[in-house]
Length: 145
Image (cartoon, rainbow, N blue to C red):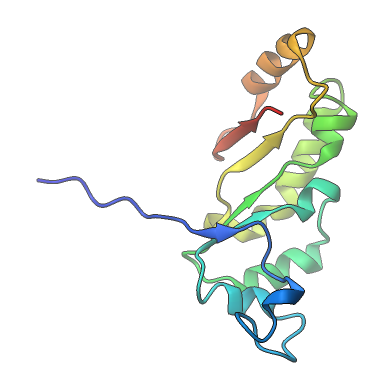
């Protein structure tokens, strides 16, 4: 028996981009871009979560606009990666973020831990300890800069 074919995920780092209006997104559809984007891509990198934990209302809107086979590849908040540098307090901040996006369920793809350019060899122990503490049930990606 052959193995099932892997699912290829294709997406952009955003779903609403002004130059796409009239080409890929319908004019006058502001606020519903994700639903339209999900018609031609099955994944997106969620950069907004790097800057702030989304509100529960925002997450509910995303859930209503994305089909069940769609995947969000969110970035962990910069509070975790840049401000706390994976150290004290980072686990609580990450937990708050994961709790907030949980309503998306299976639509949650890999969570990206984007480290700052200043993260160097002296920080590797903090990274190793942080990786050991990551909660199960999620896929994780670490981006070194």
